[in-house]
Image (cartoon, rainbow over all chains, first blue to last red; front, top):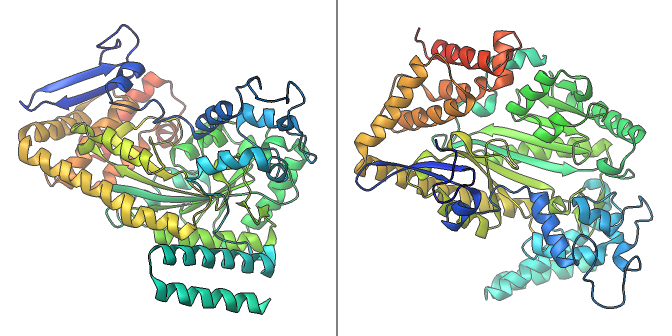
Length: 178
Length: 353
């Protein structure tokens, strides 16, 4: 295994052996940049998810220093510098390490977080999965309603009107139970 | 049961059994959960971390989750013990290497089919591990554990965002599904990067043996979901069971057959050279072992080599790692001594002198 990249002099980090059509073994030693150029790796293939998130946050909120914000928000006065009342975390802190301080941060930063969440979760904006029992009956009902409405949308999109009608009835029945 | 008991054999997830076990090594599901009324771990002070740890520990070691649960207080554990837990995939590298003063722990139970980390990035990281492709079974088990814990612990939850997690990439269901796959033929034919690109397009992460930031040693790749909000747990699982994993298995099988058809001699040579080195080497490093084991595993699965079974190979993937090796030999060793001990252990396990 060579220590230097086959294409440049940087240290090789990508090593592989391929078997050519003629059956010969071909050793490949490339640095990160050349491997990515060759389409052999993606620069972000092994990047920790937090790193991806940090880069994304920086990109969409004017860089690590907070500069680049448009409008009058200026240094120190940006709404994104608001601290969470519960734990004191600021959006700048979040930008720094991609971690929120407490459950209430989700409320405090709901606005700036929304586009980020949508991007990170394939457009997902609302939870539609499991509901803890302690969240109460009302919460469970609301989630079930949301799920039914979503299924109804899907059924209408798929022109499955029989299913759509059934789902509509279920929704009406649930609304009636309130 | 103690940590000592789990050293010498591989856990359930490495049995080499389970559906599609020629390609799928293991199925893993984890749930991120946080307690209502506390800051997340990164913002909690020492006292709060202790409170969280104690509240979780008392419910986790509750008999309802099973007998023989091992609780390890990681801040007090020996470095080799922590490394052992990392090598067995029972705790994350981050959890194993955090500063000693951070109160944190892990509960291991059910023959190592589950582990619950306390005070990692989130208050609770519940994970279930199974051999082969067993996501449905893994989900049933983890959902049951989650229900039992939830009876006593109130989780941080919001109507809009679901289960709240320290990192917004985990919010919603908090579920991370990871399937560890052995893909030697895709690596040998150079097609693995196409798979990685396709996976990325599907919002999946492809990582190495030890998760985030690790390289794919031994041709072992973990494929995991990145989306946790806006989809149900069942939808996320169904993607894996019906689309992602079957497709990757099919690509790997096609690549294996292509290698057999077009480069049979070269393939056999690779397999048998790997076998020769494993059975005769006197000094051997971890990285080399993983690569050789990968080729031998491929040989066994293709019926080209029948002198060893998959379970033994799977176990060697684990037992040749530094902490396991030191535990088995019963002594702390420097890397050079380990390389000699590793070669000896392999020969013993493979039944050669």
